[in-house]
Length: 150
Image (cartoon, rainbow, N blue to C red; front, side, top):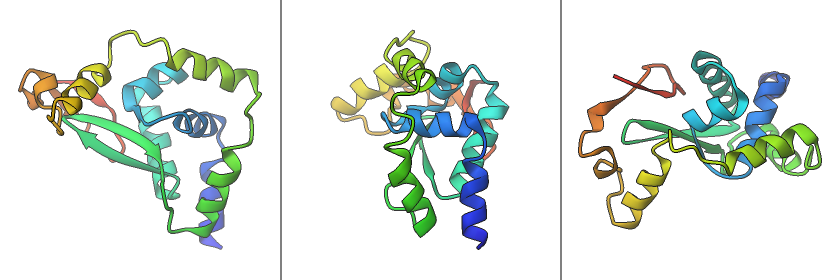
């Protein structure tokens, strides 16, 4: 029962549902989620922590950047079922369509293009993309926190 309540609470917030729909497109850097939703970094961090605790998303850190994606194989059958259903729900919703459209208009403030290029060149952790200075960008220290300049 706790599992059902945790997953349902995680999806009870419209902002978290929007995050889930965005992550259905592709893995996103925390800064992309912040800009797409127009929310403050602490709010997005809190949303990501709740979604992660429910087993719906996973976070990975790359060269000081936190990237989020949908959980590939959630241990929870409830989380697994909700991920399957969310893939179909709200596909024609105007808000979801507008948010997705905004993802394709990169403004260069995220390190994603440099990190993608670094990976193609064999620099898996993206250190070269940050000028060899991984300390240039730090983590907030919060689980699921976004990046910020040090």
